[in-house]
Length: 210
Image (cartoon, rainbow, N blue to C red; front, side, top):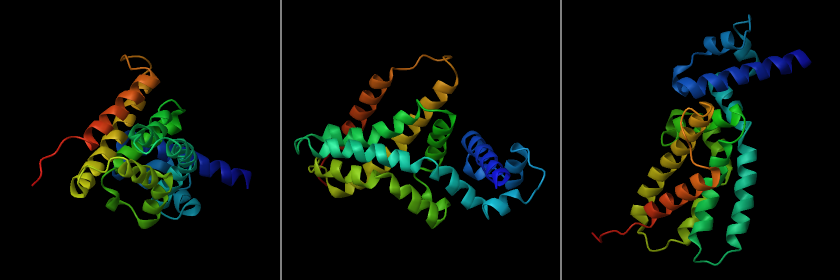
């Protein structure tokens, strides 16, 4: 059993690195097995069943942590006055950007999530269901309540764009931190504050009535 668990973790780590570096659609199962230094070419099928289940397991390592942090921030945001949109936006942004300060697995999660953002039709329903458990829907719902002046049709378009934007901004930061100081980056608080303000600016931008 210990050997089986160890092999599973080795496969997950190899898949995590490869998915983050090359993109989810560009990593064959055989390459994951080789990167995990496994001789048995059926190791993926034995431990996971198929490629989608590997991706689901990689993501499942981090979804509970992300959800807990976001729910904590949502509780704080709901205690704020109803006009306080910033605390709701913070609950969207901060849990993701904090992952950039974690270990390599958390940073890889950001890069994988960025790759998937905006095109979840590429993955199966179980992965879509898993990603819906990050409390993102609740955070966006609270932000909507506190930004009522934006028309519904514009809100949907802006939300789709901003989900991709925030995810890629966090993933880019993770890559910069992985480079070990080759490029100067903002402090954590300054980065989050700036991203929150950009999100609010996009969602509450003036619009022309059609």
